[in-house]
Image 1 (cartoon, rainbow, N blue to C red):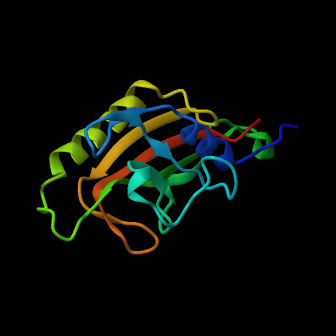
Image 2 (cartoon, rainbow, N blue to C red):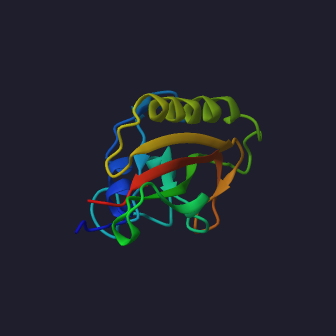
Amino acid sequence: EMAEAFKLPTVTAAIAACSITVTKPDGTSGALTIQDVANSGATKFTPTVTQAACPVLQPKVVGFVSPVGEFFTRDSMGADEAYKTAHYRLAYKFLFAPVGQSVEPFSMYSASINALVAVGLYFVTNTNIGGTTEFLPRIESFEPQIDEKNTLFHGGLISFDIEQFLEV
């Protein structure tokens, strides 16, 4: 008998472990901070994002996991022993830089879009993410985002469509 497991912590940890270099708000090149749903460690989720930490890719608290089509599919015959697959989407906020009170609204727009596109291109190219069978990034929007403490950031939304075999 095969054990079945939904590997969400494996997938989110694998995403957080990716090393992505982007152009930062100050124009220098640096590492993207990718947060996990874990409560500890270097990649733990932090509700408050500082300017110094930017850019940050963090799980979207509301709507983080959602089904894509039918959540479960059966991939073979065999009653209880049939192979099964889960199809779901993980939603992340991309926080590039805080929107300043005296800064022109579009001052960071181009840099923010370019950085989010670089993140998307990384994931389009590097699809071998632990815990997934198929992994497809999707840029959802290029628009300001709010962290969990209501700070407004230049940024956007990126999501990952995931197909995962449940048998381990």
